[in-house]
Every structure is written in structure tokens, then in C-alpha cells.
Image (cartoon, rainbow, N blue to C red; front, side, top):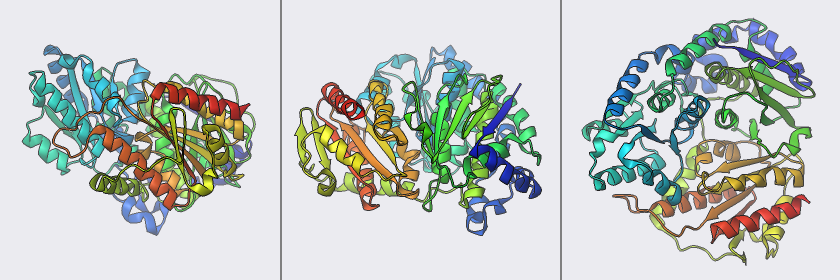
Amino acid sequence: MSSLTVQTSGAAREAVDRHVPALVADGFAGKLFAQDPTLWGAAAEEESAKRLGWVEAAEVSRPLVPEITALREELAAEGVDRFVLAGMGGSSLAPEVITRTAGVELFVLDSTDPEMVAAALADRLERTAIVVSSKSGSTVETDSARRAFARAFEQAGIDAASRIVVVTDPGSPMEASAREACYRRVFTADPTVGGRFSALTAFGLVPAGLAGVDVAALLDDADEAAEVLREDAEDNPGLHLGAALGGTEPLRNKLVLRDLGSGIAGFADWAEQLIAESTGKEGTGLLPVVVGAGGAPEAGAPDVLVVDLVAADAEDAPEGDAVRVGGSLGAQLLLWEVATAVAGRLLGINPYDQPDVESAKTATRALLEAKPEPTAPEAVDGAVEIRGDAQLLRGATTVEQALRHLLEALPGSGYVSVQAYFDRLSWAELEQVRPLLARATGRPTTFGWGPRFLHSTGQYHKGGPAEGVYLQVTAASDTDLEIPDSPFSFGELISAQADGDAQVLADHGRPVLRLRLTDRAEGVRRLVRAVKALAG
């Protein structure tokens, strides 16, 4: 049975009191579930008219359940019980949350790092099927993973087509090529649902269901929540959460997301993409700051709203300027989608477009075609090459000096963004720099693994307020990995993605410090040591 609780205090409570009565009077919830595209203004109407299918996804997706179950049983009978998901952004984050919460195995390959790709290929290939998931059907990371697995299956004497499952939009390039290649199964999703709102569609359900999750129960949960969320009532939790997120005055545009025992594994990472990509545009937006075991030193900043994810039956009330959200997984997926739609309305933006995401992709393509020679570093500190604008670096010769100069460029209302372009599974220890930098600055600090954050907070970095400073960390690899029938390798691809994004950030006037680790282990140690010195 679904359950939802949203409690607010301080500025969040004031926002609820200020905005919810007007939202109810306007019939916002009912209009939303009736798929009214006029809710976000005339400029957003054309896009919104094509992107509101998510409000009925739990119902529309129901016929998928027996199809997924039948395919899982077919594969199990053939000895296939390990699943890899090749997807980015909305195609990967929701399935990861769903499977981790259910405690079932799914290898989420959302990286172009050659070492992470190699690890995915090396484990029990004879028992593996891959789900290739892309709305557009042209996502370079996803297509590269498909090519690598197809080649690996063939080399192992396995019929590649029998082990590849595709999830895409109808009419996409991948749908046509997958059917021509006679892949094991092609699932087409509702094209009226944008990627970050697709958790309850084929994009979320197929990989999770094949891995062993009871996706019917997930849909039941969301269906029950919908009955509450569609009501134009002053106790509607979707209206409360959306008003708290987008309606504070002055706007508290940094959302510190803390998990205080919600029982939903990794939910904040999914919410991060949903909120940042939906709202970070036109110089405004909400920046989710996902914090973990290292705590949240920035929680007391005046432009921060603390959002705690708690168990459904948690009774403690929030304190200060805060929100507490509890509920079961299917219910929360729909709740946060509704809240994001509400926040978009209050911010005066279109929550369904992502105008700045393509810029990094364009820069990446140009670099892959040109294949420029790498630039020499401005300085080298042991296993770390230091690059950046001369005005930013100001002659820095050590990692600590360069970091200090980057943080000195941080505005009083700013944030720090750490972006690490290498294997997130093997080098999770690097995430400890996030709370250390937050402690050193007292400012909100985010941490994203590249290239997956490009499909998430990357939109906010370019389209949101010009408040950030950016630390990009890349890493050399002892081995590279070929992308079959491609003019570039995985190593070249991830390097171009990092270079391209740094170029776009610099073009937007954002301060970017680039550190390249020539030795991963030693470079991580040196970087962590420098950050600890700054944190004191």
C-alpha cells in the first residue's frame, strides 16, 4: 500500500501557506492529471503538450508486466540471469534506484570509462543479457556499450542478437536497427514521456523487471498515490512539496537532500536529475545537493533548503527551514514528478525542455572529429596535471594552491561542483572530497560522475544561475578499449566528453579547474590530501 507524508517548517512552511491555496483554487492538480499543457505559460505550451504522458504512466505501463515476466522466464531457462543496463540519465537512474531498493542485481553501465566498461564485460558474460535503453536511440554512450557487448558475445561464441534487449521510443533510429538485427526483444515506450519522468514506463520497468523486481507492485503503489496527488485539495502532498521546493521567498535554490532512513536506496540521485534538469534554465532553477555519510556542512547557508528523506512511518517533525518526505518507492516517484511540475510553475519556467544539454554533446562531437593534440598542463604536482585559465590559476604549482584559487572565485551565493570522469564503482572513495570542500567553503557542494552527470545536473550548470565554480577530475588508464566499428575508443570518447563540457562551461564564463590524474591511485590520494588541508 502506498503512503506519502510531506512535512514542512520555517521558510518551506511559509511557501506552502503562500502558494497551495492558489494552486488549489486554480485546479492545478486536476489540470495536471488531465494533461493540460497551458499550466506553464504560452512559451512552454508546445513542448508541454508532448510531455505529459507521465501522469498516467502507471496505468499505461500495466501491459508491460506480463511481457517482462515472460522474457525473464525465457532467459532464465537459457541460463541467463545477469543483466547489464546500458543507459544514461533517466534511462539508468530510476532502474538503479528500483533494483537497489529491492535488493536485486543490475549492473548499471552509465559510463564511457574504459575500465568500468571492461569490468561490465568481464563478469559472467555467458549468463549475461544487456538492456540497451535510449529514448532518442542515438545516445553515444549507450550505443558504444551496445557495440562492445555485441562484439564480446560474438567472440565468446554467443548469439549476440539473442542477448540484446532494446528500450527506445517508437520510430527512433535504434528501433529500426534493432528490429533489422533481430534483437531478442524491442520495447517501445510512450513518446509523450520525457526521459527524466520515465521511471514508471518501459525505461524504468524493463531492466528492473528482468533483474527480478516485482514491477506490478511498484505500479500498484504509484496508482494508489495518484488518487491523492490528482486531488485539488489543500493537503495534497504533491502541491506541498512543489510549493516548498519552488516557492520560498527569497528563493532557497540549493536543496540539500539527506537520506535519514528512507529505505529507498539512491533515491536522491534520481531526484537530483529530475529537479536539476527540469528547473535549471533561463538563469534560475533548483540545485539538488546530494549528501551522504560525510554530512552536510552547508546545511545552514541562507540559500539552502534541507530536504530529508525519511521512513514512511517517521514521526519526527522537521526543524528550521526544512522539508521531510516519507513514503514507499512507487508513490515517491510520482510525488516528486508532480512536485517538479509544481515547482516549474512557481519558477515561471518550462520543466519539460533542456535547452543547454545539447551544447556539451556538440562540443564532444567536434573534438572527436578534430582529434586535437592534448594541451600541455600549466603545472604538474606529482601524479596530477593541472589545467585552467591563467587568470584562475594565478601561477599555482600545486593541487592545493590551484584548489585554493578556485574556491576564492566562489561567489557568496555560489556552489562548488566536483565532476569526476572515471570509474564510479572502483573509485567511490573520491566522493569524500564533497563534504570536505563543503566544510572548507561553507557553501553547497555537489559531486557528479562523468559523463552521467551531463544528462543530469549538466543542464543546471549552463542554464541555471551563474554561481558555480567547477572542479573537473579526469584520469588516465593503463588500458583503452575499442568501440567496434567506431573511429574512436572509449578512452578517446570520455576524454572528449570531459574536454567538451569544460569548453562549454568556460564559454559560459564559469571558472573551471581541471585536474588529470596520470596515476589513478596516487592522484586520488594527492587530491584528497589537498582537499583535507583546505578543510582544516
